[in-house]
Amino acid sequence: MKARVRASGKIVEVTRNMTNGVYATSDGKCYWDVDLDFNLDPPQLEVTISGWVARDQPNSISKKGSLHVFHHKPSRDYFDDNDVICGFWDEDDSPAIPLSESTFPNLTWQDEPLEVEITIKPKKQ
Image: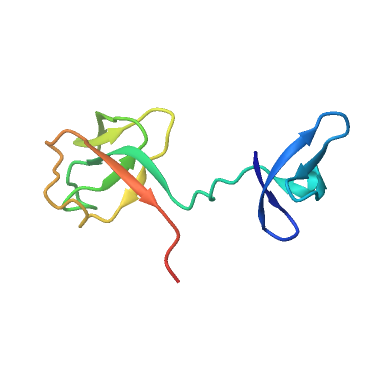
């Protein structure tokens, strides 16, 4: 099996001595298991999140309607604010993440939520 020597970063082929936890290389060197890293996969530098984007009904605060990302598909909800019915999208158990109203400019209150994938990765230096 392959392992990385922690001290040098060198990748070596090792076999395990079952009696004492020592690993030997083909060139005769020996290492304790704590001196080796067996996880050779590169670190994950990005992640993709699935979710739903929906726009609330326009109101006096937001002329276009607030835009949010939800973890699960939200449902339409309404509340009465001084005899004015306001519509918004709601997902139980999870907070919505606000987006700029200019994002998805063609998405309206009348549209069903839009299923999206968001990729998060480190910014290149």
